Image (cartoon, rainbow, N blue to C red; front, side, top):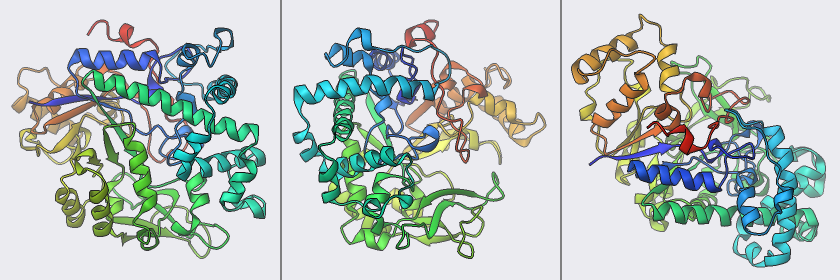
Length: 482
């Protein structure tokens, strides 16, 4: 029997506070999933985002996004007064500037009360590996007015325990720590409720880290940086059918040989932390654990695109053996989209990581027999990086091969459906996923609702204007006609 799930980031839930959060609407969404008989809720990363509001470019590989904390739960827990709650207008988009301004005030009040009630010493001791560098980094970002740590004073250009101890008693530093403790408490409570409804949560671990992140600053010896902390190479993907210049992401490249010296501890700590709050983890850009596209400096200057890069092998055998030693391999999903080779497929299959199939990519070259798709793949109509199904269909020229192939597919495999159109393509794609050979299918919430391209979550390669989609009404109102 096929298992189903819905892909929806926490920030896309509807609340009175301008952005989705871990409060009652998240619980209502879990109820909605249970009522539909869904098995999975894919929530994507919940990391504290950096530039562009993207959790895939976070300022910490561990710390949660403070703005997903629920003021409603803060009030219920006695950490915020009703009169202190700042409500914001509702709509389809998140106004991040207003959210940050309003929630910073509420979180500051809640943090001070949390510290007075619970203290933070035990939390610091339990989470020392990441909470100390994160606190120091965020504190210094705010002190300097930027996250460009290469421009900071000499004493602050790298992390040390002594540096943390210097700032640990500062009120703002303690506030940063308390906010993370509150976030983790709210997320853990939500996970327990979701589990009680018979649903598993799927999280996500981005492969690369932002250059301006706590971990790159704190563990500089693990990255391809010079003595001044400047990047010597960059992550990305090569030119393909979608981009003549490839994608230059800007993330610093790992020194895999150096990481192997401590058995890839940074990654193992990330996995362990994330698995405290979700049931399954998607390994973002899985191919990068096997081989990665490395773009070097161009005559000493930062490259303008990814064309000058080359494929470099990582240390997959040692890495996956360590992962398999510490964790159950049943808890991981391989995001195996992109340029696969035999070695990438070998490690995916050796450790039985379920791979992914995205239907929007399946009709370019011919008419598919989706019933033959492998059982152990998870099939999606699209992901957070794709257009919605309606938006994707609209973008296809009427005379395109993709439209022709899709029409032929429907005639052969979905004879009862009407010809594909803007009105029914989301239903056709969902039904195609349902009849596929894959044992698991996951739909983005936008496709379930039949929304167009104006409701897209993310456009890869564009640093701004993403991650701002949210539902404009409570889930019970939006789906009342289902």
